[in-house]
Amino acid sequence: MRDRLLTAAQKLEDAGALEEAADVRAVAAPGGWTLLRVKDSAEASAGAPLPLTIDRTLREQLKEKADDLGVLLGAVVTDGFQKVLDGSWTPPQLARATAPDKVVLNLRVNKDLMDQVQAQTARLSQKHGYRITKSSIAIAWLAEDLGVDIAIVDTEQAG
Image 1 (cartoon, one colour):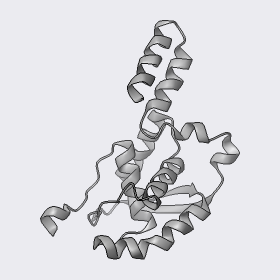
Image 2 (spheres, rainbow, N blue to C red):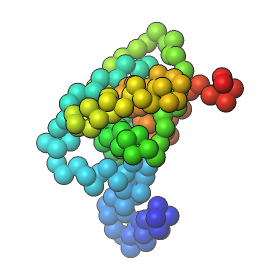
Image 3 (cartoon, rainbow, N blue to C red):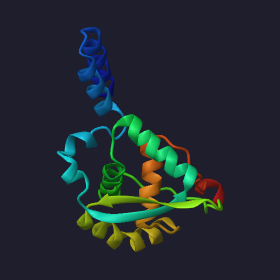
C-alpha cells in the first residue's frame, strides 16, 4: 500500500497538486497513518502525561523525525502500545544508557491505554527475561517506527 500511495503522490505532484502530494507522502511515511486519527489540536493534546527520561541527542532526533514525517510522538507511542497489547510487537531489551546529558521528553498518551500496558509489564518482563516498562516500550517503538538508532541488547549473544 505504501508504494501505491507514493505512486499516487508522484502523480499528484506531476499534475501540480503539490500540497496534496505532500499530504499523501506524509500519510505513507512510517507512523503517518496517525495523522488521520488526530482531528484537531484539542485531541492531540488530550491524554495523560508520559515523561520519558532519555539522552538529549535521542530526544532531538525523535522530534526532528516526527516533524519531518508530520506525526505526533504521542500518537506514535499509542501505536506501539497497541502493538504490544495485541501481541504483534515485542519491545527489545534496551541497553543501559550511560550518557550524562539526560532530559525529559514529555508526551501525552491515552490513560486507559497506558493503564492496560502497565498491567502487562510484569507478565511481559517475566516472559521475555528482561525488564519491560511503559517507558522502555515507548522509547523502543519511537526509535523503531521513526527510524532512529538506539542501543539495544543483542539477546542472541546475551543468552
